[in-house]
Amino acid sequence: MSKVWNFYAGPAKLPQEALQRAQKEMLDWEGTGMSVAEISHRSKPYDALHHEAMSLVSDLLGLDEDHHVLFLQGGASLQFAMVPMNFIPPGGSADYIMTGSWSEKAIKEAKIVASAREAGSSEADGFTRIPRQDELELDSGAAYVHLTSNNTIRGTQWRDFPETGEIPLVADMSSDFLWRPFDANRFSLIYAGAQKNVGPAGVTVVIVRKSWLEKANSNLPTLLKYSTHVNKDSLYNTPPCFAIYMVRNVLAWIQASGGLTAMEKRANGKAGRLYGVIEAHPDFYGCPVAQDSRSVMNVVFRLPSEELEAKFVSEAAAQGMMGLKGHRSVGGCRASIYNAMEPEGVEVLAQFMEQFAKKNG
Ligand SMILES: *Cc1c(COP(=O)(O)O)cnc(C)c1O
Image 1 (cartoon, rainbow, N blue to C red):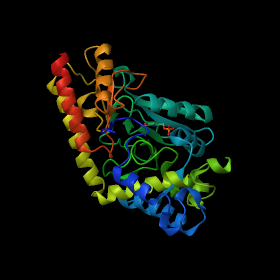
Image 2 (tube, rainbow, N blue to C red):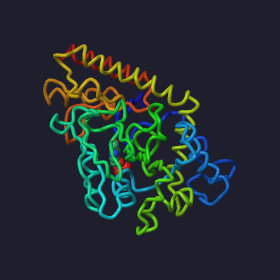
Image 3 (tube, helix red, strand yellow):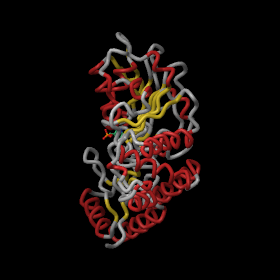
């Protein structure tokens, strides 16, 4: 098979090293003569792996003692419900900053279980930018402020997270978790479905401030309470062992590659190359996203017509560049270039874009 460059938005490309490690260990993991998918989650080797994965998240981000790493199931979508269930007190309300479909889904769940309000939105601009701090109208009594750090569909991304004072900050970081160093200790809760930037589908990484749990609602089903998972180190029931194993492989790769500083440098280089091509061909390519809000994970762009976009996507696929079609809700094209995407893959795409513009412009 010829070389394939995977630009899918999620599930998405995994680092070659993480996959090769899994391939090597598949039939005999840690000398057990079994694969990691076949042994008890109460066994010693699994327990060591589980805690290694937790420590890697913690070390990469420099988490303090008050922040606990969890591995949960149900995707980011279950977090849309668990966050309000646990943290909006009876009669209380939470603030949501609206930046596209994922924040809309998040607030929708919050409104089912409690009360929630919009504290800022870029909808009037078609979600093509991130709201500015001075546009936010925070409710000082809000249980928390929720934001989506990277908008996978719209291709927008927060650079500087907003100041929320005493109000706990919660973020859905599903599509840009661990792309750069940031002060994770500022957040009361972070969640990320693994399948975009840190692993395969099946596990959601959650970071929760333990002291905040003292305020959490307790009248919830056991599995829906964060405290259950904190108290049992995400081993209350059977965790998604294989997915966590793959996350560990990805985290170990990040660490061996120079950590989050190296990821950031690589990501800025890759995104800069693609936005550079778009800007160099203003009559052919267009990026709908405001300059200061452009995502380094999901680069969205338009061509002069939908016909040319379809041609672009199919010719790219014929040359091994997969997954460049934009999300069905917005159309256009999208190159998802998460941590695992090598700069070589972006270079291949950039050159294809230049040639395509020359031939079809
Ligand atoms: C993909 C995505 C989700 C949904 O994740 P699931 O794991 O499928 O529930 C939520 N938020 C963002 C920002 C996403 O990119």
